[in-house]
Every structure is written in structure tokens, then in C-alpha cells.
Image 1 (cartoon, rainbow over the protein chains, first blue to last red):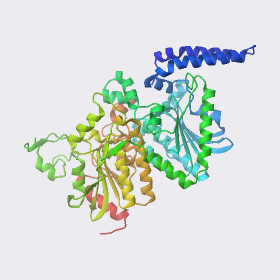
Image 2 (spheres, one colour; image 1 turned 60 degrees about the vertical axis):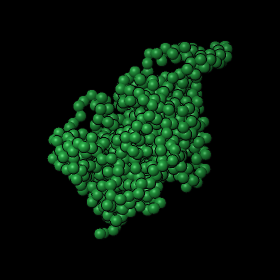
Image 3 (cartoon, each protein chain N blue to C red; image 1 turned 120 degrees about the horizontal axis):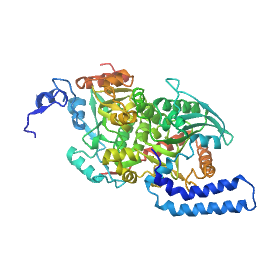
Image 4 (tube, rainbow over the protein chains, first blue to last red; image 1 turned 180 degrees about the vertical axis):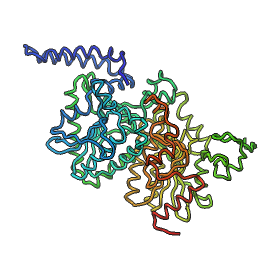
Length: 318
Length: 264
């Protein structure tokens, strides 16, 4: 699950440039603006050299970068008065997902966000963003409330996958995900899904059925982790790169396959190099999408959501 | 091979006369072990007089990602098709059970572990939509390792597609009986297999979201005996019942009569 030393070396020139910008930003000096602008250009130039050669495995590393903005960063930067709600009222609260209500562009919205931790302690507490059944059931409780009050749902995806544990199985991990797929597909309010980091299989899809599914440029969405796929099909961990390559997990691949609607650009170096710009880019797509969806009559919205997923799949009729 | 009249039970290791096993619904007469059934054996066992019409047979797989591991996906598909004589890992069929017209989608594990790619997702969805259109009860017999890796996220999306179709079946107030056979795991469990009005399993079937090996590696502990088996799921409230194969048809017919308010 770690970012490799190779990748840190690869992004080092950009990190150094960014540090110069941060240092400049701290004090007032003549020509500061111009200097920062020049450094930003340098970052872009540097990135333009690196980016076209990045492999799917390296994209996975950006998506899992420990400095990458997480759900709560988006919520805190784009929304106001976020009120978190806790627990599924059945068994427990799942810290791997945050759910609640907030004002977005002056309107109430319901938000779901899979949340990883920043520190070791927080990572463990949040179970590395791997939800348990009660997390899916908490999200379900939230979206049913959103439907009741007529608020749109914003769902932020960032998980390696649903948690594979004894308790999770005992409490019906599969059923919890399956039931969400069913309920989300007929929920009578708009649902906007953004994949901000890792889109780990059923664990992601369990909060990922919506009217619009968009992806940050360097996030990925996959039926199984590249590590899991390598272990099963190649039976060795040296084939992770091949697995990632074969499964077509990058945003542009998924766009071409008709699985996502839009790719949200990331700043040069990836979201973690310039989180502010990333928030702006996400904000733009979120607000435009919500505006469009909220104008749709309910029946049209639901029929289009059904057809959107109904059409997915590639086969031949003989 | 067909000349060999004897076989060994995978469970109790007894040498058995093949004819005896077949007469006993492919269940070991000695220990009750349920041998895996092919889709056609399953359909023949459930429909009245073993008669049914296969539908949606023309939906065939492609290799949309040009996926290559030790073998390319296209070859794997061809081999499975040859081996099973089926176009894909699920067969949809219409017929009657206890005189009630139903549609059954039966999965076949011999076809790439019953995995769900675009075609399985499409055919399950068509089965659900046909049930809605013709107002029939739906029965799905799952036997699947989960989503098919070789079709990547296209396979994953079949979870959403099939579940959305089932939401419409529910709105049409038609019964859906989900039968889980050994094994039913991964994306199949995390979509249609767990969404029945009634979810039942054959005895000792492996049923779960994550596979036992993945769980063991994650928690670094040995799993308790019987973990993720039908009886374990029943105890934990995840199934309505565990039904031995010889009672399966009667169980389903009785459930349909109750749901449809149609006493004998």
C-alpha cells in the first residue's frame, strides 16, 4: 500500500520547486508574484517531461500518496457548516467513512466521503479507509435522509477496498454493499460521485452509484487491486505493474470504456503538490454537475441513471 | 472417462458408484457432500419434468481490454466454451416449476470459475427485465468466484447494473429467490446473490465477500472452522435457510406459492 522510494525520487524536482514557492509565499518581498509564477512554470515544465511516461503503477502511487487530499480536506475547503453524523444505528460507527450534511454553494447537501488517516494513529483508527458493513449502512442512512429532505448527495471515493475481516463477513459485508447498489440506483435525489484517490472495487462502488461519476486525473478505479490481481492471475508480486497495465484502471481508459463521465484535471505534480488548485478544479465540476442534475425532472433523472449503468459492458450478440 | 462407473467423494473419500450419486441429485449418499452442478444439470433438476427453453443464448463475450496474463483472455474464453459447451458462465431459461411460469438464471462454475464479466452481467439483467416484463418470479442460482478480472472495471459495473435491475423487479412486486451454491463470493455476493426476497444456500457452500485466503493474509490469523460456510451465515443472520439439494425444488415452489398467494 506504500509509495515506493522510486516514486519519491521521481517527483523530487517538483517537490523541491514547490518548497521554494512555499518559502517565498511566507514573506513579502519585491517581485514575489513574478518569482512564484516563474517557479510554477518550472513545475509545469518538469511535470510535462515526467507525466507522459508515467506507468499505471506510478499513477496508483500518486493516487495513494500520503499527502494527497482526502475527503475531509475537500469537505472542509468546499463546504460550510459540515455536520457529521455517526453510526448505522445497528451496530457501530465506522470511522473509515464520514457522512453528514453541509452547505455547498449556499444549499444543503448530503456528503459521504471515504476517509484515510494522515498519521499512523489516525490511519489505524480509520482502518486505512477500508469500510465495514456498518459504514455502508451509515451511508445508506444518510442517503435515505437526503431523499426525505430532497438534498442532493455528493459521494467522495477513496478506498483500497471494503475491509476483508472476520467481523465484516459475519455482519454481511456483501449484503451491505449489494443493498446500497440497489437503493442508490433508485434514490429520488441527484447523486454526484467523485473518485478522488483509490477506487477499490466493490468497496468503492458501494457508495459509487450515481447520476454522474467523475474521476480526478490521477485516481484509479479497479475491479481488484493490482496487487490482488497479480497474486491471483500471475501468482507473484513482481507482476503488479502488468496487472495494473492490463486492467485499464486509469481515468482516461475508464472514460474511453464509458464507465466515467468526466476527468477532473490535477495540477502539475498531482493533487498533493497543489491542493488549493485541486479543490478549485473539483469545485468547478461539482457545481456545474449539480446545477444540471437539479433541473432534471425526477423520472428523467432516474431513467437516465438506470440507462447509464444498464449500458455498461462490452459483448457481442450472435 | 465415461466408461468409469466409479468415483471418489471429494469429502469423505469413499469410492462410490456414479449412478448412485446421480440418482441422489449429485449428493454423496454416504456423507451428504454436494457435488457441483453444471448450469444445465441445475436447470434440469429445477424445472418441471426437466423441460425448459433457453433464452438470451446469443449474448457472447469479447476481450475488450485485450487482457493477457499467462494466457490471453480470448483463448481462455474459447477453452471454457469448448469445455462447457456454453457461450458464457450463466444460462437463462424459462419454464415452469410446480406449474408456475418462472425464469431461472443458473451460473456454471466450470466456465472461468463462474466469474461475472459483461456477458454474465448483461444476461442476469436481461433475466430480471424479462421477469418484470412477463410478470414471472425470478430465480438465480449463483455459483461464482466474483467479478471477472480480465474485463476490469467493466466487470465491476455489472454489480451496479444487475442490482439496479433488481430494484425495478422489487418495484414491480415480483418475487426473487436467490440460491447460493458452493462457492459464491466477491462481486456476485456483493450484488444480486444477496438481494433475494429469500436468500437460501446449499449445505456447506462457501459464501462471502472476501475470499478466506485474503482474510487470513489481512488479519494474520487462522480462520475459525466453518467460517463463511452456509451454516455459519445462517447463524449470523445472513441467510433465510440452508436447504439440502433434494429439498430445493420443493422449497422454491412453496416460497413462490406463498409470495404469489397461490395455495395448491
